[in-house]
Image 1 (cartoon, rainbow, N blue to C red):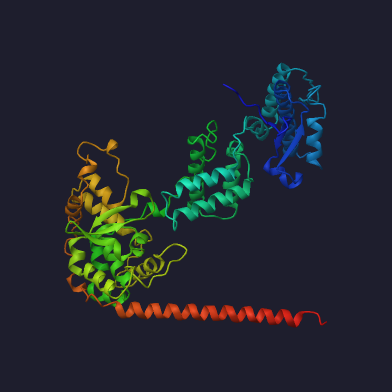
Image 2: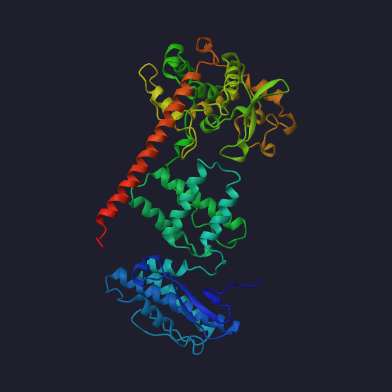
Length: 507
Protein backbone atom coordinates (compact mmCIF):
# COMPACT_ATOMS: atom_id res chain seq x y z
CA UNK A 1 0.00 0.00 0.00
CA UNK A 2 1.39 3.43 -0.99
CA UNK A 3 1.91 5.87 1.87
CA UNK A 4 1.71 9.56 1.07
CA UNK A 5 4.64 11.76 2.03
CA UNK A 6 3.75 14.82 4.10
CA UNK A 7 3.57 18.09 2.15
CA UNK A 8 4.85 16.58 -1.11
CA UNK A 9 3.09 17.64 -4.31
CA UNK A 10 3.87 17.37 -8.03
CA UNK A 11 3.11 19.93 -10.75
CA UNK A 12 1.82 19.14 -14.22
CA UNK A 13 5.41 19.00 -15.57
CA UNK A 14 6.37 16.30 -13.06
CA UNK A 15 8.52 18.50 -10.81
CA UNK A 16 8.07 17.89 -7.09
CA UNK A 17 7.40 20.69 -4.60
CA UNK A 18 7.38 20.97 -0.84
CA UNK A 19 4.10 22.66 0.23
CA UNK A 20 3.64 24.16 3.69
CA UNK A 21 0.22 25.25 4.96
CA UNK A 22 0.75 28.43 6.98
CA UNK A 23 -0.69 28.11 10.52
CA UNK A 24 -3.89 30.12 11.01
CA UNK A 25 -2.34 32.25 13.76
CA UNK A 26 0.43 33.38 11.38
CA UNK A 27 -1.60 34.21 8.28
CA UNK A 28 -2.17 37.86 9.18
CA UNK A 29 1.63 38.28 9.32
CA UNK A 30 2.62 36.07 6.38
CA UNK A 31 -0.30 37.18 4.18
CA UNK A 32 -0.41 33.73 2.59
CA UNK A 33 -2.22 30.46 3.22
CA UNK A 34 0.64 28.31 1.87
CA UNK A 35 4.32 28.49 0.89
CA UNK A 36 5.90 26.28 -1.79
CA UNK A 37 9.54 25.38 -2.42
CA UNK A 38 10.68 23.55 -5.56
CA UNK A 39 12.64 20.38 -4.83
CA UNK A 40 14.19 20.59 -8.32
CA UNK A 41 13.67 16.94 -9.09
CA UNK A 42 11.27 14.59 -10.89
CA UNK A 43 12.60 11.55 -9.05
CA UNK A 44 9.96 10.45 -6.55
CA UNK A 45 12.53 8.79 -4.25
CA UNK A 46 14.69 11.90 -4.00
CA UNK A 47 11.60 14.06 -3.59
CA UNK A 48 10.21 11.95 -0.75
CA UNK A 49 13.47 12.04 1.17
CA UNK A 50 13.78 15.80 0.66
CA UNK A 51 10.16 16.36 1.77
CA UNK A 52 10.65 14.30 4.92
CA UNK A 53 13.77 16.27 5.86
CA UNK A 54 12.04 19.58 5.16
CA UNK A 55 9.09 18.49 7.29
CA UNK A 56 11.43 17.78 10.19
CA UNK A 57 13.11 21.13 9.62
CA UNK A 58 9.80 23.04 9.63
CA UNK A 59 8.53 21.19 12.70
CA UNK A 60 11.65 22.31 14.50
CA UNK A 61 11.17 25.89 13.33
CA UNK A 62 7.53 26.01 14.45
CA UNK A 63 8.36 24.44 17.81
CA UNK A 64 11.15 26.98 18.31
CA UNK A 65 8.96 29.91 17.19
CA UNK A 66 6.05 28.97 19.47
CA UNK A 67 8.40 28.54 22.39
CA UNK A 68 9.70 32.09 21.86
CA UNK A 69 6.17 33.43 21.84
CA UNK A 70 5.36 31.68 25.09
CA UNK A 71 8.48 32.85 26.89
CA UNK A 72 8.04 36.47 25.86
CA UNK A 73 11.02 36.67 23.48
CA UNK A 74 10.66 39.02 20.48
CA UNK A 75 8.48 37.65 17.69
CA UNK A 76 9.76 37.25 14.14
CA UNK A 77 9.44 40.38 12.05
CA UNK A 78 9.01 38.52 8.77
CA UNK A 79 7.79 34.95 9.26
CA UNK A 80 7.65 34.16 5.55
CA UNK A 81 11.32 34.98 4.96
CA UNK A 82 12.25 33.19 8.18
CA UNK A 83 10.37 30.05 7.10
CA UNK A 84 12.02 30.18 3.68
CA UNK A 85 15.45 30.39 5.34
CA UNK A 86 14.60 27.36 7.46
CA UNK A 87 13.51 25.47 4.35
CA UNK A 88 16.83 26.30 2.70
CA UNK A 89 17.73 26.45 -0.97
CA UNK A 90 19.65 23.17 -1.01
CA UNK A 91 16.85 20.83 0.04
CA UNK A 92 17.03 18.53 -2.96
CA UNK A 93 20.81 18.19 -2.89
CA UNK A 94 22.42 18.51 0.53
CA UNK A 95 19.25 17.90 2.58
CA UNK A 96 20.68 19.20 5.83
CA UNK A 97 18.56 20.26 8.80
CA UNK A 98 19.60 22.29 11.84
CA UNK A 99 17.59 21.80 14.99
CA UNK A 100 18.17 23.87 18.09
CA UNK A 101 18.12 21.85 21.28
CA UNK A 102 18.29 23.02 24.87
CA UNK A 103 21.15 25.48 25.20
CA UNK A 104 21.65 26.11 21.50
CA UNK A 105 23.52 23.03 20.29
CA UNK A 106 23.11 22.19 16.59
CA UNK A 107 22.34 18.86 15.00
CA UNK A 108 22.85 18.18 11.30
CA UNK A 109 20.92 15.47 9.51
CA UNK A 110 22.31 14.18 6.22
CA UNK A 111 20.28 11.00 5.96
CA UNK A 112 16.70 9.93 6.44
CA UNK A 113 17.58 8.03 9.59
CA UNK A 114 19.20 11.13 11.07
CA UNK A 115 16.10 13.14 10.13
CA UNK A 116 13.94 10.69 12.06
CA UNK A 117 16.24 11.07 15.04
CA UNK A 118 16.00 14.84 14.63
CA UNK A 119 12.23 14.64 14.72
CA UNK A 120 12.40 12.73 18.00
CA UNK A 121 14.63 15.47 19.43
CA UNK A 122 12.17 18.11 18.29
CA UNK A 123 9.34 16.30 20.02
CA UNK A 124 11.35 16.00 23.21
CA UNK A 125 12.26 19.68 22.95
CA UNK A 126 8.61 20.57 22.52
CA UNK A 127 7.56 18.59 25.58
CA UNK A 128 10.25 20.26 27.64
CA UNK A 129 9.56 23.84 26.57
CA UNK A 130 5.82 24.08 25.97
CA UNK A 131 2.72 22.01 25.62
CA UNK A 132 1.62 24.15 22.70
CA UNK A 133 4.79 23.39 20.76
CA UNK A 134 4.33 19.69 21.40
CA UNK A 135 0.82 19.86 19.98
CA UNK A 136 2.08 21.76 16.95
CA UNK A 137 4.48 18.92 16.15
CA UNK A 138 2.14 16.03 16.91
CA UNK A 139 -0.88 17.47 15.13
CA UNK A 140 0.80 18.02 11.77
CA UNK A 141 -1.16 16.08 9.12
CA UNK A 142 0.66 13.35 7.28
CA UNK A 143 -1.16 13.49 3.96
CA UNK A 144 -3.61 15.28 1.70
CA UNK A 145 -6.67 13.80 0.04
CA UNK A 146 -6.72 16.11 -2.99
CA UNK A 147 -10.25 17.45 -2.39
CA UNK A 148 -10.86 20.98 -1.17
CA UNK A 149 -13.42 21.88 1.47
CA UNK A 150 -15.60 23.70 -1.06
CA UNK A 151 -15.64 20.74 -3.45
CA UNK A 152 -16.48 18.32 -0.62
CA UNK A 153 -19.14 20.73 0.65
CA UNK A 154 -20.88 20.83 -2.75
CA UNK A 155 -20.96 17.02 -2.91
CA UNK A 156 -22.23 16.80 0.67
CA UNK A 157 -25.03 19.32 0.11
CA UNK A 158 -26.06 17.68 -3.15
CA UNK A 159 -26.61 14.43 -1.25
CA UNK A 160 -28.35 16.07 1.71
CA UNK A 161 -30.73 17.96 -0.62
CA UNK A 162 -32.47 14.64 -1.23
CA UNK A 163 -33.44 14.28 2.44
CA UNK A 164 -33.59 17.73 4.05
CA UNK A 165 -36.17 20.51 3.83
CA UNK A 166 -35.21 23.54 1.74
CA UNK A 167 -36.82 25.79 4.36
CA UNK A 168 -35.35 24.52 7.61
CA UNK A 169 -32.23 22.41 7.90
CA UNK A 170 -30.68 22.98 4.45
CA UNK A 171 -30.23 26.78 4.74
CA UNK A 172 -28.75 26.32 8.21
CA UNK A 173 -26.36 23.63 6.97
CA UNK A 174 -25.23 25.80 4.05
CA UNK A 175 -24.66 28.73 6.40
CA UNK A 176 -22.56 26.69 8.83
CA UNK A 177 -20.27 25.31 6.11
CA UNK A 178 -19.92 28.72 4.45
CA UNK A 179 -18.89 30.32 7.75
CA UNK A 180 -16.44 27.54 8.63
CA UNK A 181 -14.71 27.58 5.23
CA UNK A 182 -14.47 31.38 5.38
CA UNK A 183 -12.77 30.99 8.77
CA UNK A 184 -10.23 28.24 7.93
CA UNK A 185 -9.82 28.86 4.21
CA UNK A 186 -10.57 26.51 1.32
CA UNK A 187 -8.01 23.96 2.50
CA UNK A 188 -7.61 20.31 1.60
CA UNK A 189 -10.16 18.33 3.62
CA UNK A 190 -7.52 16.06 5.15
CA UNK A 191 -5.52 19.08 6.35
CA UNK A 192 -8.28 20.25 8.71
CA UNK A 193 -7.24 19.54 12.30
CA UNK A 194 -9.18 19.40 15.57
CA UNK A 195 -7.34 22.59 16.53
CA UNK A 196 -8.92 24.35 13.52
CA UNK A 197 -12.42 23.38 14.63
CA UNK A 198 -11.55 24.29 18.22
CA UNK A 199 -10.43 27.76 17.09
CA UNK A 200 -13.73 28.14 15.22
CA UNK A 201 -15.61 27.16 18.35
CA UNK A 202 -13.61 29.64 20.42
CA UNK A 203 -14.39 32.38 17.91
CA UNK A 204 -18.12 31.68 18.27
CA UNK A 205 -17.74 31.84 22.04
CA UNK A 206 -15.92 35.17 21.71
CA UNK A 207 -18.74 36.42 19.47
CA UNK A 208 -21.22 35.62 22.28
CA UNK A 209 -23.05 32.93 20.31
CA UNK A 210 -25.54 30.87 22.31
CA UNK A 211 -24.31 27.47 23.46
CA UNK A 212 -27.10 25.74 21.49
CA UNK A 213 -26.08 27.65 18.34
CA UNK A 214 -22.45 26.62 18.78
CA UNK A 215 -23.50 23.00 19.23
CA UNK A 216 -25.65 23.25 16.08
CA UNK A 217 -22.55 24.31 14.16
CA UNK A 218 -20.42 21.54 15.66
CA UNK A 219 -23.07 18.88 14.93
CA UNK A 220 -23.27 20.07 11.32
CA UNK A 221 -19.47 19.97 10.96
CA UNK A 222 -19.34 16.51 12.53
CA UNK A 223 -21.86 15.28 9.96
CA UNK A 224 -19.91 16.89 7.13
CA UNK A 225 -16.59 15.29 8.10
CA UNK A 226 -18.32 11.93 8.71
CA UNK A 227 -19.57 12.19 5.13
CA UNK A 228 -16.03 12.92 3.88
CA UNK A 229 -14.64 9.92 5.77
CA UNK A 230 -17.42 7.46 4.90
CA UNK A 231 -17.47 8.45 1.22
CA UNK A 232 -13.69 7.98 0.86
CA UNK A 233 -12.99 11.66 0.25
CA UNK A 234 -10.64 11.65 3.24
CA UNK A 235 -10.97 8.07 4.46
CA UNK A 236 -7.81 8.07 6.59
CA UNK A 237 -8.55 11.18 8.65
CA UNK A 238 -10.13 11.30 12.10
CA UNK A 239 -13.22 13.48 12.42
CA UNK A 240 -11.82 16.83 13.68
CA UNK A 241 -15.18 18.09 14.93
CA UNK A 242 -16.04 15.17 17.18
CA UNK A 243 -16.02 15.57 20.95
CA UNK A 244 -16.19 19.38 21.03
CA UNK A 245 -19.85 19.89 21.98
CA UNK A 246 -20.63 22.14 24.93
CA UNK A 247 -22.06 19.86 27.67
CA UNK A 248 -25.58 20.59 28.82
CA UNK A 249 -26.50 22.78 25.82
CA UNK A 250 -29.43 21.03 24.20
CA UNK A 251 -31.36 22.04 21.12
CA UNK A 252 -34.83 23.17 22.20
CA UNK A 253 -36.37 21.70 19.06
CA UNK A 254 -35.42 18.27 20.37
CA UNK A 255 -36.74 18.84 23.89
CA UNK A 256 -40.18 20.40 23.42
CA UNK A 257 -42.73 19.08 25.88
CA UNK A 258 -46.10 17.54 25.00
CA UNK A 259 -49.26 19.32 26.07
CA UNK A 260 -51.04 17.86 29.08
CA UNK A 261 -54.72 17.02 28.73
CA UNK A 262 -55.76 20.01 30.84
CA UNK A 263 -53.67 22.26 28.57
CA UNK A 264 -55.29 20.83 25.45
CA UNK A 265 -58.67 21.62 26.97
CA UNK A 266 -57.57 25.21 27.70
CA UNK A 267 -56.27 25.68 24.16
CA UNK A 268 -59.48 24.57 22.50
CA UNK A 269 -61.94 26.57 24.58
CA UNK A 270 -64.68 26.99 21.92
CA UNK A 271 -65.56 30.68 22.37
CA UNK A 272 -61.99 31.87 22.88
CA UNK A 273 -60.58 29.73 20.07
CA UNK A 274 -63.10 30.82 17.44
CA UNK A 275 -62.76 34.47 18.51
CA UNK A 276 -58.98 34.53 18.08
CA UNK A 277 -58.42 32.11 15.21
CA UNK A 278 -59.99 34.21 12.43
CA UNK A 279 -57.94 32.88 9.52
CA UNK A 280 -58.08 29.27 8.30
CA UNK A 281 -54.43 28.45 9.06
CA UNK A 282 -54.86 29.75 12.63
CA UNK A 283 -58.04 27.70 13.03
CA UNK A 284 -57.24 24.46 11.18
CA UNK A 285 -53.47 24.35 11.79
CA UNK A 286 -53.55 23.48 15.52
CA UNK A 287 -56.46 21.08 15.02
CA UNK A 288 -54.63 19.19 12.28
CA UNK A 289 -51.51 19.15 14.46
CA UNK A 290 -53.52 17.75 17.38
CA UNK A 291 -54.80 14.80 15.36
CA UNK A 292 -51.88 14.02 13.00
CA UNK A 293 -48.64 15.04 14.75
CA UNK A 294 -47.56 16.67 11.48
CA UNK A 295 -44.91 19.38 11.54
CA UNK A 296 -46.00 23.01 11.19
CA UNK A 297 -44.50 23.46 7.72
CA UNK A 298 -46.00 20.18 6.52
CA UNK A 299 -49.44 21.55 7.46
CA UNK A 300 -49.01 25.15 6.32
CA UNK A 301 -47.69 24.20 2.87
CA UNK A 302 -50.43 21.68 1.94
CA UNK A 303 -52.01 21.80 -1.49
CA UNK A 304 -55.66 20.84 -1.90
CA UNK A 305 -54.73 17.88 -4.10
CA UNK A 306 -52.85 16.41 -1.14
CA UNK A 307 -56.18 15.82 0.60
CA UNK A 308 -58.12 13.02 -1.09
CA UNK A 309 -59.89 9.72 -0.61
CA UNK A 310 -58.06 6.43 -1.07
CA UNK A 311 -60.06 3.22 -0.90
CA UNK A 312 -62.82 5.14 0.85
CA UNK A 313 -60.49 6.62 3.48
CA UNK A 314 -59.71 10.35 3.49
CA UNK A 315 -56.00 11.02 3.83
CA UNK A 316 -53.47 13.84 3.95
CA UNK A 317 -50.65 12.97 1.56
CA UNK A 318 -47.46 14.64 2.85
CA UNK A 319 -45.13 14.80 -0.14
CA UNK A 320 -42.21 16.78 1.28
CA UNK A 321 -40.73 17.40 4.68
CA UNK A 322 -37.71 17.68 6.93
CA UNK A 323 -36.38 14.20 6.10
CA UNK A 324 -37.04 11.46 3.56
CA UNK A 325 -39.14 9.63 6.16
CA UNK A 326 -41.48 12.63 6.28
CA UNK A 327 -43.08 11.55 3.00
CA UNK A 328 -46.16 9.63 4.15
CA UNK A 329 -49.93 9.25 4.00
CA UNK A 330 -51.83 10.11 7.18
CA UNK A 331 -55.51 9.10 7.47
CA UNK A 332 -57.73 11.98 8.60
CA UNK A 333 -58.95 11.46 12.17
CA UNK A 334 -62.68 11.07 12.75
CA UNK A 335 -62.73 14.30 14.80
CA UNK A 336 -61.35 16.32 11.87
CA UNK A 337 -63.93 14.79 9.56
CA UNK A 338 -66.67 15.71 12.03
CA UNK A 339 -65.39 19.29 12.24
CA UNK A 340 -65.70 19.60 8.45
CA UNK A 341 -62.11 19.59 7.18
CA UNK A 342 -63.06 17.76 3.98
CA UNK A 343 -66.05 20.08 3.47
CA UNK A 344 -63.67 23.03 3.78
CA UNK A 345 -61.43 21.45 1.12
CA UNK A 346 -64.39 20.99 -1.26
CA UNK A 347 -65.41 24.62 -0.71
CA UNK A 348 -61.94 25.91 -1.59
CA UNK A 349 -61.78 23.78 -4.73
CA UNK A 350 -65.13 25.15 -5.85
CA UNK A 351 -63.81 28.68 -5.30
CA UNK A 352 -60.83 27.95 -7.58
CA UNK A 353 -58.09 27.83 -4.98
CA UNK A 354 -55.15 25.41 -5.10
CA UNK A 355 -53.77 25.51 -1.56
CA UNK A 356 -55.30 24.57 1.79
CA UNK A 357 -54.45 28.06 3.04
CA UNK A 358 -54.48 30.22 -0.13
CA UNK A 359 -53.59 33.48 1.61
CA UNK A 360 -50.23 32.24 2.95
CA UNK A 361 -47.16 33.50 1.14
CA UNK A 362 -43.92 31.57 0.95
CA UNK A 363 -41.18 33.20 2.99
CA UNK A 364 -37.57 32.43 3.81
CA UNK A 365 -38.64 29.63 6.18
CA UNK A 366 -41.61 28.42 4.18
CA UNK A 367 -45.28 29.06 4.93
CA UNK A 368 -45.46 28.40 8.67
CA UNK A 369 -44.20 31.66 10.23
CA UNK A 370 -47.46 33.52 10.90
CA UNK A 371 -49.33 30.37 11.94
CA UNK A 372 -46.72 29.46 14.58
CA UNK A 373 -46.32 33.05 15.80
CA UNK A 374 -50.07 33.57 16.19
CA UNK A 375 -50.41 30.27 18.03
CA UNK A 376 -47.61 31.33 20.40
CA UNK A 377 -49.41 34.62 21.10
CA UNK A 378 -52.60 32.67 21.74
CA UNK A 379 -50.87 30.48 24.34
CA UNK A 380 -49.76 33.67 26.15
CA UNK A 381 -53.32 34.95 26.57
CA UNK A 382 -54.42 35.12 30.24
CA UNK A 383 -57.31 32.76 29.48
CA UNK A 384 -54.87 30.10 28.22
CA UNK A 385 -51.69 31.05 30.13
CA UNK A 386 -49.34 28.37 28.78
CA UNK A 387 -46.06 30.27 29.00
CA UNK A 388 -43.58 27.39 29.23
CA UNK A 389 -41.03 28.04 26.41
CA UNK A 390 -40.99 24.30 25.73
CA UNK A 391 -44.72 24.34 24.92
CA UNK A 392 -45.13 25.53 21.31
CA UNK A 393 -46.84 24.43 18.10
CA UNK A 394 -44.31 21.60 17.73
CA UNK A 395 -45.58 20.26 21.07
CA UNK A 396 -48.60 18.84 19.22
CA UNK A 397 -46.21 16.40 17.56
CA UNK A 398 -44.89 15.24 20.93
CA UNK A 399 -48.43 15.12 22.27
CA UNK A 400 -49.59 12.80 19.47
CA UNK A 401 -46.60 10.46 19.89
CA UNK A 402 -47.19 10.32 23.66
CA UNK A 403 -50.92 9.62 23.27
CA UNK A 404 -50.40 6.92 20.64
CA UNK A 405 -47.86 5.22 22.86
CA UNK A 406 -50.29 5.33 25.77
CA UNK A 407 -53.01 3.87 23.56
CA UNK A 408 -50.80 0.88 22.80
CA UNK A 409 -50.30 1.66 19.10
CA UNK A 410 -47.59 -0.50 17.55
CA UNK A 411 -44.23 1.24 17.22
CA UNK A 412 -44.06 0.70 13.46
CA UNK A 413 -47.51 2.18 12.86
CA UNK A 414 -46.79 5.11 15.17
CA UNK A 415 -43.52 5.95 13.45
CA UNK A 416 -45.13 5.67 10.02
CA UNK A 417 -47.85 8.17 10.97
CA UNK A 418 -45.53 10.87 12.30
CA UNK A 419 -42.80 10.37 9.70
CA UNK A 420 -40.03 8.81 11.75
CA UNK A 421 -37.59 6.21 10.48
CA UNK A 422 -39.05 2.70 10.41
CA UNK A 423 -36.27 0.22 11.16
CA UNK A 424 -37.77 -3.17 11.89
CA UNK A 425 -34.29 -4.64 12.33
CA UNK A 426 -33.98 -2.95 15.73
CA UNK A 427 -37.57 -3.48 16.85
CA UNK A 428 -38.40 -5.78 19.71
CA UNK A 429 -40.68 -8.75 19.05
CA UNK A 430 -43.65 -6.93 20.60
CA UNK A 431 -43.08 -3.84 18.46
CA UNK A 432 -42.24 -5.65 15.23
CA UNK A 433 -44.32 -4.57 12.26
CA UNK A 434 -43.75 -5.85 8.75
CA UNK A 435 -43.82 -3.06 6.18
CA UNK A 436 -46.70 -4.80 4.43
CA UNK A 437 -48.82 -4.13 7.54
CA UNK A 438 -48.52 -0.34 7.13
CA UNK A 439 -51.72 -0.13 5.12
CA UNK A 440 -54.10 2.84 5.00
CA UNK A 441 -56.70 0.74 6.85
CA UNK A 442 -54.29 -0.14 9.67
CA UNK A 443 -53.07 3.44 9.89
CA UNK A 444 -56.65 4.69 10.09
CA UNK A 445 -57.42 2.32 12.94
CA UNK A 446 -54.29 3.47 14.75
CA UNK A 447 -54.84 7.22 14.26
CA UNK A 448 -58.40 6.98 15.56
CA UNK A 449 -57.03 5.68 18.85
CA UNK A 450 -56.05 9.27 19.57
CA UNK A 451 -58.50 10.21 22.28
CA UNK A 452 -58.40 13.36 24.39
CA UNK A 453 -60.66 12.54 27.30
CA UNK A 454 -63.21 15.23 28.12
CA UNK A 455 -62.39 17.31 25.04
CA UNK A 456 -65.57 18.28 23.19
CA UNK A 457 -64.78 20.00 19.90
CA UNK A 458 -68.35 20.07 18.58
CA UNK A 459 -68.86 23.79 19.42
CA UNK A 460 -65.85 24.65 17.24
CA UNK A 461 -67.52 23.52 14.03
CA UNK A 462 -67.92 26.27 11.42
CA UNK A 463 -69.63 26.47 8.04
CA UNK A 464 -67.42 25.21 5.17
CA UNK A 465 -67.37 28.69 3.60
CA UNK A 466 -66.71 30.53 6.88
CA UNK A 467 -63.21 31.60 5.80
CA UNK A 468 -63.81 32.49 2.14
CA UNK A 469 -64.37 36.18 2.86
CA UNK A 470 -61.33 36.52 5.10
CA UNK A 471 -59.15 34.66 2.57
CA UNK A 472 -60.25 36.96 -0.26
CA UNK A 473 -59.72 40.04 1.90
CA UNK A 474 -56.23 38.97 2.93
CA UNK A 475 -55.20 38.17 -0.66
CA UNK A 476 -56.45 41.62 -1.76
CA UNK A 477 -54.49 43.29 1.04
CA UNK A 478 -51.35 41.42 0.03
CA UNK A 479 -51.76 42.48 -3.61
CA UNK A 480 -52.21 46.11 -2.60
CA UNK A 481 -49.19 45.98 -0.32
CA UNK A 482 -47.11 44.46 -3.13
CA UNK A 483 -48.27 47.20 -5.49
CA UNK A 484 -47.34 49.92 -2.97
CA UNK A 485 -43.93 48.36 -2.45
CA UNK A 486 -43.29 48.27 -6.20
CA UNK A 487 -44.38 51.90 -6.58
CA UNK A 488 -42.11 52.95 -3.72
CA UNK A 489 -39.16 51.12 -5.28
CA UNK A 490 -39.85 52.76 -8.64
CA UNK A 491 -40.04 56.21 -7.07
CA UNK A 492 -36.79 55.63 -5.21
CA UNK A 493 -35.05 54.53 -8.41
CA UNK A 494 -36.31 57.63 -10.23
CA UNK A 495 -35.15 59.84 -7.37
CA UNK A 496 -31.65 58.39 -7.59
CA UNK A 497 -31.53 59.03 -11.36
CA UNK A 498 -32.51 62.69 -10.84
CA UNK A 499 -29.96 63.07 -8.03
CA UNK A 500 -27.21 61.64 -10.21
CA UNK A 501 -28.11 64.02 -13.05
CA UNK A 502 -28.13 67.03 -10.70
CA UNK A 503 -24.77 66.04 -9.33
CA UNK A 504 -23.15 65.43 -12.72
CA UNK A 505 -20.66 68.07 -13.94
CA UNK A 506 -22.05 70.62 -16.42
CA UNK A 507 -20.80 70.31 -20.04
